[in-house]
Length: 282
Image (cartoon, rainbow, N blue to C red; front, side):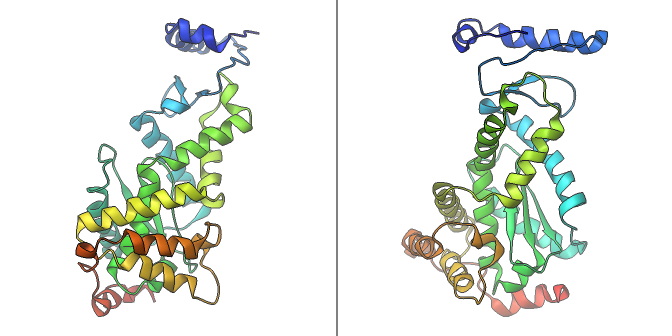
């Protein structure tokens, strides 16, 4: 059993590479290594491709994308079925890439996918993966409204909201204090958070603001964001992706205030053209 204080790690930066080397040698030699309770809550082991010790609080872009790919594999094989229409998938991806180019976080790849689900929903995992349901696409009146949701979910990735949630949840579950954790544990926790755990109120406001800013810079009509959220709020039943989110009416008001008058009208407002494009979803 090995116990080291956090101050020891701060004074001894060589400990991390040394610990990684010891673990690697132990696995190579086939000898068990018991390392427990290094009292620095941000250290976990993630194994996307080999063995390495990383700090979840300082997760690199490359590591985030690697975990996101594993979460995507789990999501599309166990949770949802991807919509296979190539033309509409390309269309959604083009909207997403147009927004991501204005996100301020362009150093990671972004992947936008449609999932077969009648519910009105959208979500993002980590490392650039965003999903919208066929139900949401059919509910939107035009491309700008769809872009407003895609921009919001992209905003969660830009602000690394799920990374922060994962850090908190891993610490609560005691995972973040272990020097050796199978990557499946981290992927399972992250996927569960993405699909069933709401973001904080502040995270939703941040994603709203990031999304509407991307819309304006990408040339989309910013007015479509509060308009679509108002439409969803007035439906008989609250859509899935809003039912767990905070204070929708307040968010609509904030979005209206965030609309830049010079960007209120723009691309994506042709209802007829959009409905004709997504007709194959019916």
